[in-house]
Length: 546
Image (cartoon, rainbow, N blue to C red):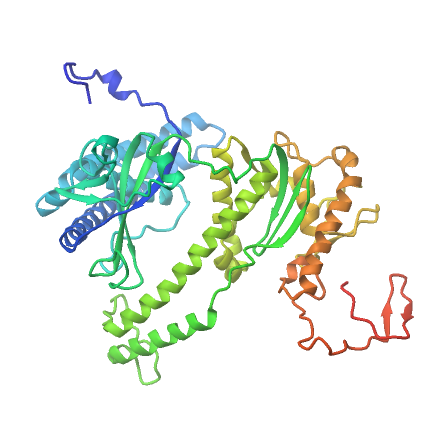
């Protein structure tokens, strides 16, 4: 918008974009009375319907573009001809109106009637941008289908483009009280600001780019800050600048290699102590309690919807028709109890991710990991990935490293193959996942497989991540002792009773000590040595950790 006293902006000035600046988020809880909560629910319902409408229209345009013969002709252009291929697809998108600007124009015709009373033009454009991004993922082959927002699931967030109109956050000056409010459609929603919190104080000193309203479910309508439907409201402020870093979170200056598995994490810095740990070992999901709640929900749903089950208790098939389920109040209460347990587990996991990220960043500001497909892990290690969320950890690590001025390098696994490569002889031998130790005829090893991969990653050249034998010869002698020490500490934790996954390669992983301190261990008559001979003892010994 031109300043007061200036003429309209020229077309060139309108096309020029403001240079990108770093952005971080600050979240504050809102105080909402029952009347405001009812109006917010109405606004979000209007946003849901408008989003579904523009998403449906964009999906039709995408299908028409796919049905155009020119689409196949554009796909037939070799990928080496990047300019010609990009121009062909760009022409198709404009011809069929499948662009972000075209959806912005389309949403104007949909924002009519009662929806226009709830959703302003700027918010409608952000909804159109959100729909375009979802559809563009399908167009680029990164997804299979878009999800329309159902009335039951609801629409839980809406954001603005800027902070000078419509949905905006206003912070009073110090002489007026330093209070903050979210303003939307005539409602003034006070924010709870803890000025003693250094993170909040740091964030509110920066320019606000835009505000985002978020609705989250609480444990029950009687929870603190919840409305009649059991929802809480928060405002997320997108601030210009870099987030606050607490003094207790140190930032290292070296290079760190890592090997992240579905349930393990091996860290080897170039200088410092190596570690091999169970990833998010403190997570303790109450699986039995969640399973009991799931069975209770199933019984309650069967009791309330007997017409949807046959005589054998199976759900009746109704073709393309979607069955309408009746959910009793007791069913909804049980579902909220289950959701509360899952939210508590997610919050604990997020806290453990943050703690581990700061531990890694304290070792160095350049982190080297192998780039893996976490979606592929979900198919093979679904239970472990669903519990520990390694992909979320890597995203958290990437943001934190970037905010501290460091870099996170993800090297391609096909090119490096760190778990199959030996730096002693330079050979690449494929190992099954069950083989957790690296031992080569050239004299390297035995060494734990994850630790060895992290060691190789620590000394890779990010510009040229191809492993080289000459690069590792000078570092192996000092690093071998660090890797063995890390494995010994993991072995000691297993002896003390910590449950370890089989991927750590410990023969006695998960073994627990005798319940009674005076109970003698089982007698072992002999042990097979490396040479293939048996050696006997006169007195009983504890079974060794192999």
